[in-house]
Amino acid sequence: MNVLGISAYYHDAAAALLRDGAIVAAAQEERFSRAKHDSHFPANAIRYCLQAGGIEAANVDKVVFYDKPFLKFERLLETYLAFAPRGFTSFRMALPLWLREKLFLKDLLRRELDTFAPGAGWQERLLFSEHHLSHAASAFFPSPFEEAAVLTMDGVGEWATCSLAAGRGNRLEILREILFPHSLGLLYSAFTYYCGFKVNSGEYKLMGLAPYGEPRYAGLIRDRLIEIRDDGSFRLDLRYFDYCTGLTMTNGEFDAVFGGPARKPDELLTQRHMDLAASIQLVTEEVVCGLAGYARRETGMKHLCLAGGVALNCVANGKLLREAKFEKIWVQPAAGDAGGALGAALVAHHISGGAPRVPVTGDAMRGSYLGPEFSQGDIEARLTTAGARFKVLEEAALVDTCAADLAAGRALGWFQGRMEFGPRALGARSILGDPRAADMQRTLNLRVKFRESFRPFAPAILREDLAEWFEMDTDSPYMLFVAPVVDSKRRAMSAEEEALFGIDKLNVARSEIPAVTHVDYSARIQTVHPETNALFHALLKSFKQKTGCPVLVNTSFNVRGEPIVCTPEDAFRCFMGCGIERLAIGRCYLEKESQDPALALSYEQAFAPD
Image 1 (cartoon, rainbow, N blue to C red):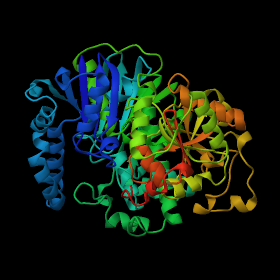
Image 2: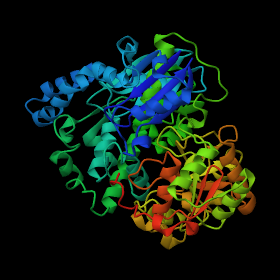
Image 3: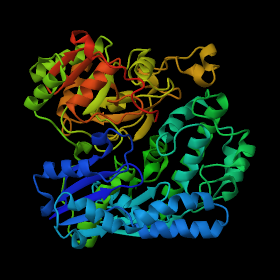
Image 4: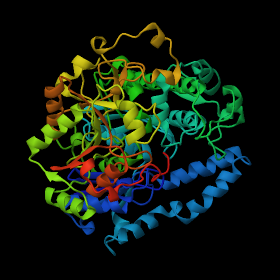
C-alpha cells in the first residue's frame, strides 16, 4: 500500500510517502523551489517522493490532504458574520481566492495530480484528513511509544488551535479541543508581529531574543490578554487583537497597553522589545506546562507527544522535560504544517485503513533524514559542471581533514546523505564551527548567515558525552529541547559583566563553549547517534580527539531568507556567496581559496529577509 500525504496552500507545503506504513520519503517544497515557506502545490516534493520510492504516480493507492478546506471556509465565514461589519476588508480580500481555488480544492488537487498520471482516477483515491488530527498522527505514530498523550498546539487549523488526543497502538482519539479565535500560537505570533518580525517565520527569532530581556510585561499579558484556567485551558481578550477582522495581528488597544506602535522590521531592537519577548515566552511556557499537566491528569499516560508550530518552541519543551510529570517526551521534528503531510498519510494508513504500526527500533523518523541524497559520481559531475575545484578524499581522510579545519577555527559546510525533513539542520545540510571560539557566534551570524547578531546557535554533541556538558541526560536528536550548560563548564562572571543588560550581554563568554551558550546559560541541544548519522558522529569524535571537546556548532546550511540547501549546486552557490571557508559534499572537499574568483557571488541580498 503506497500512501502519499500532501500539505499546501497555506505555508510550508510538503509531501510524504508511506509504503505499508513505513516512511519512505518526506520533503518540503521550498527546498526544491528555493522560495522560503513555499505554499504552492508541492509538485517537486511529490516528484522526489515518487522517485525515492521507485514508483510511478499511478501506483499510489491513496493521496491524503492534511486538512478540510470546507471547515476552514466555514470558520472564515462565521468569523466574519460574528464580527460584521468589521473585517469586511480582510474577508473581501480572502473570498476571491477561496471561490477560485480553495473551496473547490478536491478538483484543484485532481487537476494537479493529473499532471503526474492523467486519467488515473484521482477522484476515487483522494482523501482529506483534519488539520489537528494530521498533526497528532505525525507525532504519535512515528514515536517510540505504544501509548501516549498527544498535544497539538498551533495558530489554527480548521477550528482547533490546541487539541489533546490519546494514542494507543494504531488508534488516536481526540479528547478535547480549544477553538479559534483563542489560540496560543496566534498570541505568540501577535508578539512576533509587534516586535517587528515576520509572522509564521520569525517566531524563533522572538524565542532567541527572550533571554536578553526580563519578563516585565508578563503580569500585564496575564491581566489583559489571556485568562489561564486551572485545567490548562485559556481564553484571549479579543479587544487587543486584529487577526479576526483586520490585516494585522494587533491593534491600537494593544499598542496602548504595551507602550507604542509595532516595531518596523528595519528599526533597532530596544530593551523594551527584549522584555516583551521574555514576557510572552514566559507566559507561553506557563500555558504549555498547564496543558501538559491537564493531559497527564486526564489520560493517566506516562508518555507525551507534541506537534504543531508551538511544539517548535524548544525552550518551552525543555521546561516540560524538566517539570512535567511525563517519563518521556517525543516531539515530531517537522512539527509545523510540513509535518501535516506525513500525518495525513499516517491517518489514512492507520486510522482509516486500520493497519497496525510498523515495529521499529527507536522512532520511525530515522533521524528525520528523509530527503534527497546524491551518489558520489553525481556529486562530482554536478560540481564539475558548476565550475567547482575539489579533491576527492577517502572517508576517513575527509573526516580527519574537516575536524582539523574546525579545530583551526574555520567555518565548514557539511553536505552528506539524505536531507533533513523539518526546519532543523541535523548534520546532513549543516554549517559547522568550533564552539570554543568566543567570536564564532558573531562570525557565523554576520559573515556567513548575514543575519541578526543576537541569534543563538545550537550545539551538536556526541550522545555519550551529553551529561558531562549539559543538565540533561535524555536523547534530543532533533534539536527540540533546551537545557542549561552544567556548572563545571560555566565561566565565572565579573561584577561588571553581571550588570550588563540586553544586547550588551552578547559578547560575554559564559562557558567553555561560548558559541553555543546563550546569555541565560542555555543551549538548544542535538544529540548525535551513530545509528542514525554515523559520519556526523565520526566527525564529532575526530574533533573531540583533537580538542577534547565533543561539541560542534551546528546551524542550517543557508543564508538569511534562503531555504536550507538541497542539491550540491545549492551548496556550492551558498559556499561561494558567504563566509564559509571549507565545504565537504560527499567525499568532495573544497577550499574557498582554491576556487575560481569569477564564481564568487554577492549572496547577502539574494533572498528576501525572513
